Amino acid sequence: MVGAVGASGSGRLTSGSGGLRRSLGLFVVTGIAASVAACAGEGREVAEGVVEGRTDGAVEEVSADFTSVQPDLFAASGAQPNAFVDFDNDGDLDLFVGFRNRPDRLYRNDEGIFTDVAADVGLATPEDTRVAAWGDYDGDGHMDVYIGFPNADGLTDRIFRNDGEGRGFTEVTAELGISIAGTTRQTSWIDIDADGDVDLFVALRDGPNRLFRNDGETFADITEQTRIGDSRRTVGVAWFDYEQDGDLDAFVANQNGDADGFFRNDGGVFTDIAGELGMDGGVRSEEIGGVGPDVTDMDNDGDLDLFVANYGPDTIWRNNGDGSFTEVAAGTVVGADHHSTTSAWGDFDNDGWPDVFVAAYLGDEPEAPDHLFRNEGGRFVDATPPAFRAKGASHGVRWADYDADGDLDLALANNHREEGTHPLYRNDLPSDQAARSIQVRLVDAQGRHRFAGAEVRVFDTASGRLLGTRLVDSGGGYCSQGAAPVHVGLPAAVERVDVEVTTLGPEGRRSERTENVDPGAIPGRVLELRSGSDR
Image 1: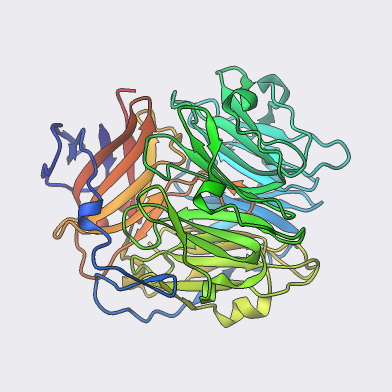
Image 2: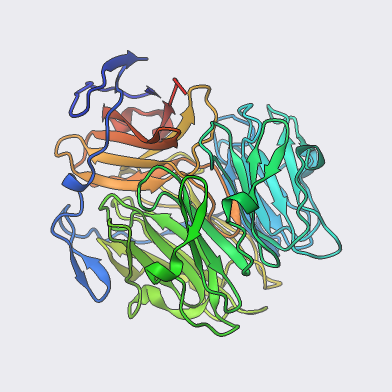
């Protein structure tokens, strides 16, 4: 069952055998299976490796205008991972930023005004933070955080339990039975065994990757039995159900000439199929490798595609819907050959097509500036604002609607420049354009955030056309994981939408649908859906 708050619906049953129920004034459809392919991706053609053609009329020309927010507050250099999360459960998104040999910061959001409270809550970690992954490991409804470090000075990664209501955090690493003292990179809280609690994956650049099963009071290392202990030099990982068989698979981006991996989940045992799919990156020199993968449905055809930021040409792997992928960035503006650190998909102009921000650097000086590429129905154009070009390169990249106006704002984190900052940019779309969106926060029946890797699809109620597919954050940006709602921009003609969520459980993929939602009637434009009350 999916329950919804703050919307209105007609309860129109379109498929499946489930029933209708009314919850808080909203009719909810239960037990409905998705049928995405029938209404998405029709009439698309491939040209120069990029999908052409739009189904919603002419391309809207929308400028990328952003304003720096509280620039004095966000001025410290050396920032690396960043992530949006509502750590105090007050309904707005806060921002965590990890730093290189400077105390980390946790910016509490109070109606759009940010204050650093890291020292007050016990998260001002002073070491070289490379990882920040937020997840509710104990299922108490409060987001906990994993902080990871490089292999220096014998540092051990730390897990901090959120004590709730903004009171603070307590380190619990030892009592959970987890000890990682390597060069940690992408870490993800994911429910790998579909038992209702989140497990922990840790990527390492100097040893085999690790997978820990959540057993309640402690975690058990299941790396060996699951065969996911890739010993190559891993930096980034993207978790998603690429072939839609009901469990999470992992694309692993490896550095220093190592081939990338793509670990298919076969009932809890993983098989690397990157070479079989032609997605391992081929023969590489020591200077070339994968860094930051990020997942979305870039062409609105209902399946999930993959952008990989590389040292070397960046790649976009378009999902063909049959278990295979095609690389479509080569020879285009998004396939540039430079040292990229990370990428982040986000529909900044609310036209229904996810755009992509790519950060790039080399050493202490940037080799190339950051770039914002606008998605025009599958063809990408450079829409980088002049201020971003002048600023130079970044490390962490995160999109989220921190001010609840309907459009995506942008948080960046600079690392390798003394004059670098970690700016937060407010998206200044016109108010009518900003309002053309819907955001979905997916929680379980108890209100807990545990569906990392779940999928959200939004359809036009009137036509049945698929408007977008988004992934609940399972890790991205630069070695980070947050908990921002998924965001889908809406074409101007769309008045009401159907929202379908697909979660992964013991029974495999489960799709539930909420129909005839008026986005304009949702407070803060965030629709909270509660899934799986019978699990």
